[in-house]
Image 1 (tube, rainbow, N blue to C red):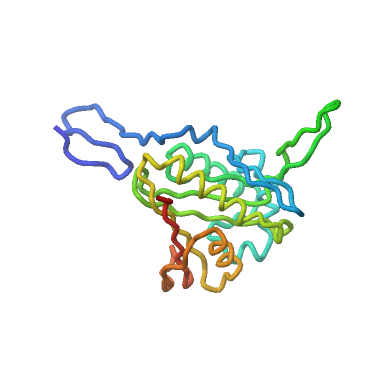
Image 2: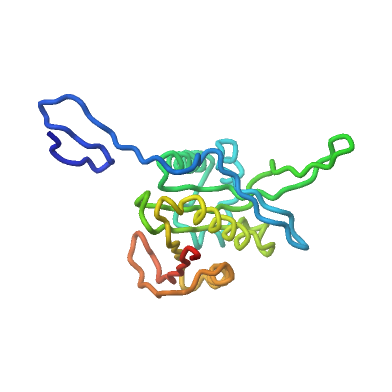
Length: 225
């Protein structure tokens, strides 16, 4: 007989029975294989969104020295050890299906004999994430940031468009119908990105520390159709 549910998704049987049954969410796609692409612009190369890797940690630590970035994000990395922990957290979120994050990488061209190849093996210039606190539920949350040296090249808006289109397609049969985006009310750049990607401003929310340390705008976009 089942006696209750554990907070980690484990169903616990009567104490007289030794067996435990773990219920694991199975996403409708292989999240480790997902790579997204955003097109080039007239002045900036195409983007590839791929999973974060342990080898990204040193570069991530450098990116997080940017004061403007640290002003807006909650999960700040202070050193390389912190960056390694952060990357491991992204890997766990992808495995659990409740936090699917991507390193944003700019493409470049390499010559292979007579063939010109487009490659994406450079360091990340940003981050994009789809959060689903209730996997299989109707709503998700998206977020992003751009490295200081890559701002002004449309990285955030192109990555958000790619992430949004993929999320609504990949999780359509899983019940995803709404994506939400939160940013500080004084983060006007993020507000412009949200609006340009079809996320309507639907509410202004008061600060609620520690989860929401400042007043915020809530933007929402619904699945087409």
